[in-house]
Image (cartoon, rainbow, N blue to C red; front, side, top):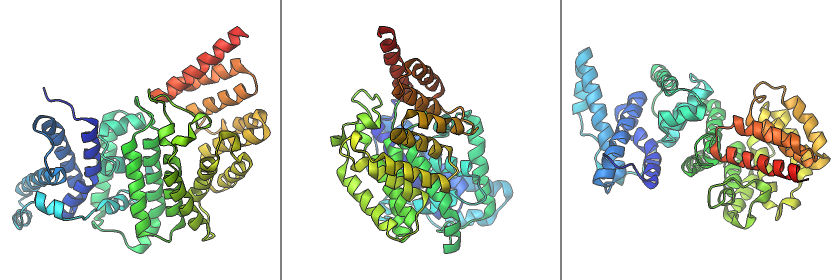
Length: 418
């Protein structure tokens, strides 16, 4: 029986996935088939590495295996369709070697990012394809995150790849015009990947550091490509300012620690300074976007020495502005929290009534969780318990569920004792 991969080796495979997909796509010119070949190479690594050990050059090893899979695939297609020219192309040169893979620092991840955000794809398909091709997640992991059966997600990813193949998009960075058209989708996909890593929607752990770190790496690369774009800088700043709190978000046992209870001495001050500097430079350009506003809110939290020092009036004002720029119901939910911190829980609950009428968030666990917190602040502990329990039933995150059930239990006990 083959031993499972260690967490460190799993993380290595995730980091290498986009590099291998990019190398194989550049070599053979077929993104869809290259992504399939890379997945086969990853399966081979998961089977062989625990038994034989991780090779000295894991990237080169994966590229060689994936290249062999691609060669077999093209030869099979060539024989079936009698395409002699395809066979000739295969024989034109050897598969990429480990030495060449290591000697080249070429990283095609940004090309993959823009390719996966091709306008032919829906936003959900783009996110799913990015999570697999760039984030290194398996189809099963993506399906769990979306709460759909694995075959359904496999079909969605397959259709997305076929759409890219049918579009005949070249494997290169898009033109400046196309880049501008796709940038909004690229930023949104990176934002979603970061959020999934920072606060996992399912599973036993609250954070998937590999995903959030990869999103930050990609955002840095994107800023190198577009140094003057304020929203690219804003998104990178938002990620840094949020990720700076990572070490304080859970206890040693992995339990969730809410923002107002975190040990702020554990926050990464270097990341906070970098995020604030990025944001300040972006805001100086005078054109403010949604990621810059969210980064500004994160900066206010990060720069408060204590939870009680947080400038909630400024946060409420920023969320009010963000609401006028975005139709995201989560923004409306967070605005209600900020207003409650300034004007009291009743004002927040009044706003939540309107938020709850939005079908996109009406059954989301965070709506019940916020109602629970505001009823608790208003002294209505029994109502708070009801909402905390309802939120716990709706979330798919084990750590979120544990936190909410613990809140409900503590409040219920205090109600009985009073």
